[in-house]
Length: 280
Image (cartoon, rainbow, N blue to C red; front, side, top):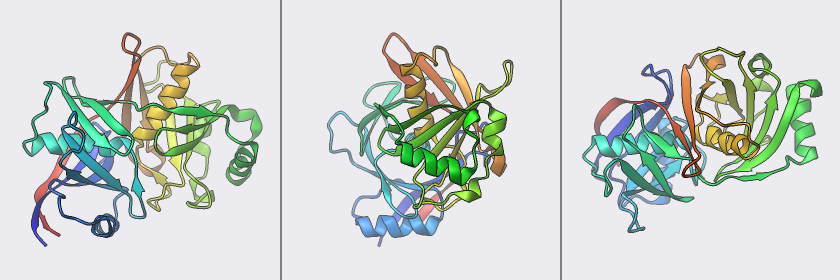
C-alpha cells in the first residue's frame, strides 16, 4: 500500500459535472491487474485509468483503462481525461503541443494546443453489421426499419454495432432499458439534428459494460462514427455532436477531419474536479 496522486475529472462538456466522469490514478506503478480492476469497480465510474511509465520510447506515458467489469484497449474520454490529469500534475510532453499516449491500441496522439484537447481517432475497421445482430437490435429496441438509413460494425479497440437513424428525434425516442450488457454488446445510434441546430447529430451508446442504462458521452464511439462517415464521404467539415441528452448530461464532442494529414481529431472540454491522494 502507498499514497498515490488521484484526480477525478469531467470530460466532453463545457459545463463541469455535465460530461463523463473519470477517475485517474497518476502513479500506478506496482499495482497488479486485480488491484486495478477492484479499484475501478469501487469508484463505480464508467472508466478508471491508471498511468504508468511508457514502454514505447515514443510515448509520454502509458495508460490502462478499466470499467467496473473489464479492461479496455482504448476509450475516448479516458484518453482526454488522462492526458489532462497527466499535464495538470506536472507531465511534460516530449514534443511541444502534442502528447503521445501508449495504450492497448498503440500510440494515440493528443493535440493540446487548441481551445480544448483533441485526440487523433485511431484506425477503425469498418464491416457490415451481421443480419442476425441487426435483427436482434431492431427487435429489442422496437425500431421501425423505415427509420434506419445506414448500419455498420466498427472496431477501433472496442467493437460498435451502429445504426444511423433518420433523425435525432428518432435516436432520442429509443428506450435504452430494453437492452443490457452483455446480452447486447455496445450499440451506437446516430441521427441528424435539423439544419441550423447547435449540434449536427445526436449520438447514444446503449448497453455499456459499466452497467449504466447508457453511456453519458463516448469519445471512442464518436471516433469510430467519424471514421465511418468520413470513409463514405459523409463527413467533410468540422461538426459538433450532442450526447447524454436523455440522462440529463450536456455532452458535446468536436469532430474535425484534417484532409491534409488524413487524421480525424476528436475533442472536448475537460475539467479537473477533484485533486487529492488515495492509498492503494
